[in-house]
Image (cartoon, rainbow, N blue to C red):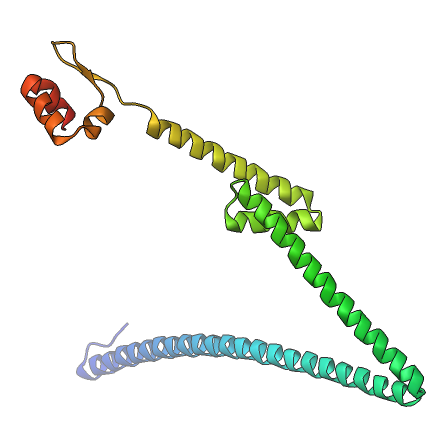
Length: 212
């Protein structure tokens, strides 16, 4: 129990103030620690991403060095191998390499020519240039599954286009009046100014319906 005197009251108030200050310091300290933890986590994540990028760049550099070294070793081996051969053997090897290069170029030219012919064939059937190119490559490579998918897509698009054209050409409903005249919207649109004027004078109701 608190003492009922001035000194006791002052002492109790000081204890309450001390307790409140301690709680505020504890809360502030806790918040500061949480902020420090958050900053630490963010910094760790940032470092982690930077480490990953550094490792990736280092790996790419290592692979490039290995590739360059392999190319240099191959070139060195070829030079050493050629140096140990006679002049006739060297010429034979060079000729074989040149023949292989020519054959490769000819094969590429034949492929390009065949693809162009196939592409033109598909275009003549109504394929778009992009679809014709895809179909030509699929047929040349013997990829029947892809070729079937392209053809299926082409026929579906062609069917939609035919239906749209038929709908466009289908004549609109005839508009008649009490005099028995029957004129379609397409016929009205094709009339000359004089014909429309004559229609408006003879059949004003039909004319008003058609001009809307």
